Image (tube, rainbow, N blue to C red; front, side, top):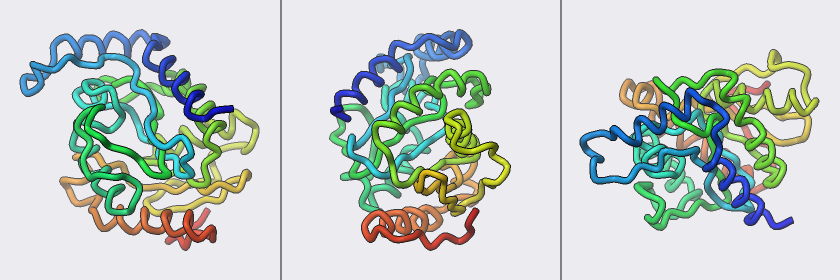
Length: 239
């Protein structure tokens, strides 16, 4: 199996996906009406594929593309404030070659990291329905099977639950009850991979101080050191 080729196949399927009528209607409406600041852009307006290193051992799982971010640029966490915060942190931890992510041709490369969203289309009010996340689970499952990551970093509880639901669907766990989300929480899963929680880098969190660059730095450096040293992550709280 060629991981890069297989991930490209999934990316093409995500881009063409129309499984969720509500999301299709919304993403295309936003792409047509646009935001004044981006009126010269041709919006992507489709499902937004995962992005990153095909040999990544860190899998970063977010919530969903932003209406005027990933839905505009066609790349996850690209072109919005959440992405600005996230990629700055990834760059400082050595997982990205540059601190900014503005468009698909900006030269950004991820190092040992791959990013995808639980729902692959921008949802109204940034809130995908459980059924819509479930419709995307197959893409996540295939990416996970290709990459076989050592660490899954869940950006927020919805992403955390989406990964646990994947494992439950695979028969690897019975329920989510034993795995409580929290910032910096680490769980060693039945397959040996680490599931690490971190608060989502939304403006609601970053502008209120609930999430700070220092908080992200500590978690990402811990992951980086684990992947480099191949030893247990020294987490603030364990499952």
